[in-house]
Image (cartoon, each protein chain N blue to C red):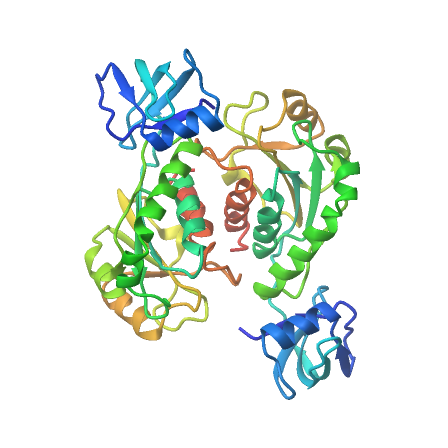
Amino acid sequence: MHVRFHAPGLEPGDRSAVLSAEESGHAVRVLRVRRGSEVRLFNGRGYECEAVVENPAPAGLTLRIVGPVCPRPEPRVRLTLAQAVLKGDGMDEVVRDAVMLGVRAIVPVVSARAETDRARLLKARRRERWQRIAVSSAKQCGRAVVPEVHEPVTFEEIVAALADPIRLMLAEPAVEGSAALDLSSLPGPVSAALLAGPEGGWTASEVSLATSSGWARLTLGSRTLRADAAAAVAIPVLQYLWGDL
Amino acid sequence: MHVRFHAPGLEPGDRSAVLSAEESGHAVRVLRVRRGSEVRLFNGRGYECEAVVENPAPAGLTLRIVGPVCPRPEPRVRLTLAQAVLKGDGMDEVVRDAVMLGVRAIVPVVSARAETDRARLLKARRRERWQRIAVSSAKQCGRAVVPEVHEPVTFEEIVAALADPIRLMLAEPAVEGSAALDLSSLPGPVSAALLAGPEGGWTASEVSLATSSGWARLTLGSRTLRADAAAAVAIPVLQYLWGDL
């Protein structure tokens, strides 16, 4: 795969580009990019082009744009992952894997068993950290689209806010409530939302609220999955069913 | 889920058990287990029982066994993961996820693009490290079976050694050779083997050797997957197809 850089301001038709100080430093010091190196730029919104390094300045590397290239196709189903905020670095893994797997947006959710709240997440600038991980994963996995990581919302907000035709709540087999969804009956929608829980699982009232708001309960067999791995196990199966794998 | 400890010497019918120094120290110092605590023991070979702590000694915790419990069911298809050895800590993630997902054995493979060899892996006692990660993941995910992590073998050896009715080689779409397998035509076998590649992918001669030895090539859409994540993406899809999810 080509060496790829994220240039968020890049627009189709641009003849030149300057990388951010962070991207430039990485390009020059780690990847040893030189004058004349052929690289790729992507703007995170689906546009990708070939470019040649003109001046490898570590504070602001400049490039001449050669022309557009065909970006990696995105999955047909636009999937939003609403992930209950996990402890420690758990969300880092979730964001990295979800971006690799092709999700279009990630919404951190403060659920009842999350051991944090929005004020603390905001103060620690966690959204910004997760967004940087999303850029890095898109770069590594060849995507020209960088999914947006939204500001954290409450469980009540996310359950009411998302209006995708398919809304799935990942839950353990032991959870009471509506019968688990028969995956094979799931149509290939235009967009879908997947709600993945925290370490301790959903509370009974969260399951009940989601169910009464029209979310279907999705259970993945009898396996016990780590909270930081559950979405990454469910997504490939859904994509297989939707012809997106 | 219950607090669970690995007691590899435990046999059905035993009336008491002593934990290893490592398990005992963890139980007493981290999990704060006390005299009278009710826990579970599993032997890693499918047997699990209830037990009560008698003496919480950090050097050798003793327990009275109450009786057997029904272990978590294992997947019906016994899956062997043959994983090309990855750089850095990549294999740690693969082992942790593969055990969570229910594989029955893991064979590290020294492929052409592995940047190591068997002598170095042996000297660094890597197999022992991966086996400890397998125990830890089985404990966390409620499995009563700990998959065996085998000594590393060469690519030529693994391609010839495994005789499962279904043998799949994970490869990128760009790899030349036989047509990619149509997943939906895959029968549910008794056992299967999955061969997952290193960071740089397989060499053309590796693909050709596997193909001529009867391995089918399996490609997962147009996504670029990290080498440490590819098997964990393929396994749930295979398990879904085999009714194991």
